[in-house]
Image (tube, rainbow, N blue to C red; front, side, top):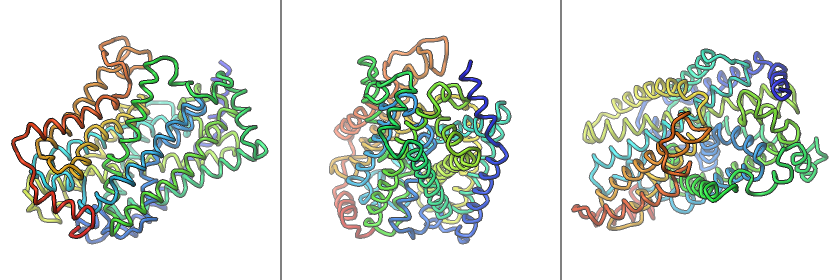
Length: 532
């Protein structure tokens, strides 16, 4: 009961008016920037890839802004505060994931494609079925990722603005969705990229400032901070040791391995991350983008380590769990403890900006995939007028925005971390095998591509439906029933290898032969950039 009183007083001490004012200021500034830089002439290249005008540094910072979602800022800090060492493993997985992008994906993708992932996968395959499959996986992944962000907005509102009612939270989710669509319609990729750059700079700056404040509280001694965190936590010294969340039994250890595989391999197959490599002029800048993104995220994730253990030390896991946002409230409550309502207002704005910017990037990617892959290359068979294609993309963005708002309202209060991890698992299962096979395997053909995408996507979704996430566990989405037979919460350990196997078997079973000439052209283009 005391925990509930403390959480309630913490929320009461915050200033919803200040939080709204700071957030409104951010929206006003970024909307002005988007309007100023947005392309007046709506060419496809401007709308989809910002005309390829960004430098590696600019795009790298924007990439980190695209990748550092609400799950990174709020979820990881909360996981560290409550679970300790095991929570930080999320940060390590997210950071290591970029090595796959740097070594295998960024340069080759930039040289081979033009606007979407479907350009790469269909380069030497039959255009229509492969583009349809690529668009399907892109839309499914974007939807899951978007639902997590929109539902996160609803949960965040409960704590930061003290809006407890479902209608109030739904209203705010709708506002976030509308602003997001405006970003995409007005600015296209160029405007959205500038929003990502601004958001990433503010987010990293806020994390660094909180880290410095925390170190000051504990005499600039990490040892003092960790000791106090262990003292305040019910876990005691086990907070600083592995196994707090994933070491109870063999199944939880396998769960961790599966989650790690999905996080590390999923980043290299997320459509909104892949699309960013087309906003730079050449492959060298694409590589520089990944280096800059990794550097930005390295700084940020080091700060989340301090913020998470700082929340455990100053706020306490009891107050964090009892707050309306649960684990996700760790960073805002810590801001309230160390900087009062002003710092909470800033952190509130940063959290909203994080959700807003990530969802805008996802909306742009999903609408571009539908307009470019489905409308232009399937419906119009490659003969679409560029202006019509951009118009379809903008209409699709509005439809996706409406779906995201409805889905976010329905998913409000659901397991947000599950939705994010599922998006990573689906991305790795459906996209990674086809990308790597297309770039590196000479015999890979259309049948193998379709088997890999649909096999990985289907296996991932089926395993999730019949996992403890949906039924059979106290924290399941559907309570009171049990139809699960798959023991792991994340399917990545099974669905990702299954996708590679499907691609291999489909290639051997398919009657269509690989086009040796197109493969040679793709190889030269991927390695040298000639003709890209």
